[in-house]
Image: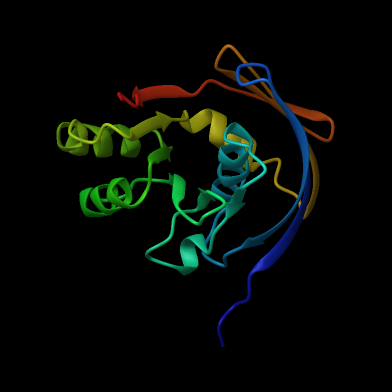
Length: 182
């Protein structure tokens, strides 16, 4: 019998001084049976870093042709495609063809570094692609904070991220491996 998703309720408060975005989001998130707490928290972090009133979680792991998070225009066009992990070159190419902007948040330490060395030369032609890496220690600490009912405060300033979960704090320094170049 297949396992069912675990539901997480998240009260997310985002204070993004870099984008001048200050908003609260009440999120109901389905954690796929194969998803780790670390990946779930990276997904919530990615949402916070791109928070927008039209940003939403997609089917993610349950679907091969959807990102983890996306933002569509009012007319239905894909404006932002957010993927987590280490997607293959084919998926990167297809994503860049489908969306105005594509963001990949990778994590996993040495594994992510090896993935990037393998794929980075083939990504130079994608001007709408941005790749950001989170350190293994940062995401591991973030994963320890996972709870089925969470109050998260995410503060972003000068590219630095502070995540407060209940009484704990995790500091995250995203590293841009590739910028969008219009």
